Length: 196
Image 1 (cartoon, rainbow, N blue to C red):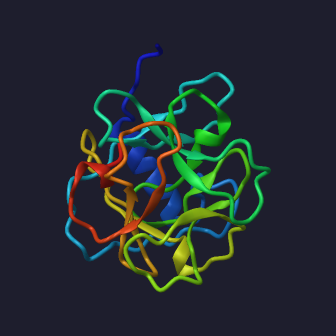
Image 2: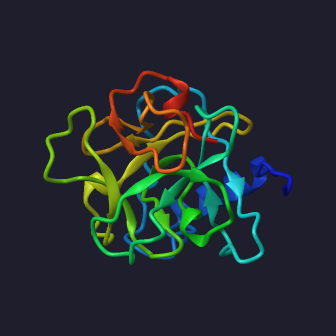
Image 3: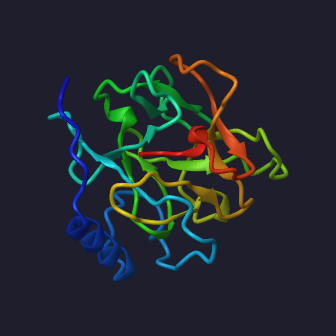
């Protein structure tokens, strides 16, 4: 198993500065706004840089901390064809390009899948209640595709959806197996909402 490396604070500052200048690491979609979020930092952000040799430069794995026995990555369903509405789930980290994401650190950002160039999207036609699904969708600048996060090196983060102010949540009643769903849920600082 390849050793995980935590990005350095200098790299985080460089990415955040690049985002503020309009030169962030996003390969697709609208430029992320570099606005600070007024919600206090719950725990921060720790991302694992791309570790597979085929991973795109500047992309990250986003790993759910609520699965202590296995690295479970935020995963764009690979058997689908990368079209609007494809689901996002947890899957054992395997180095697949569908598990790598572009995002800016801190503030408001879109999260773009490296395999398909589609944005992490809170289902727009739903009303922003607990259990609403998270999917892939063509980047369109909507607030349902923007996520607040805070960067504190060495700590996990929580992603709050700008449209609904609900957190990115790995379904907690599931057992951490491949295919567990990712949804929106009221932010509660639980490990199933904590991403490293």
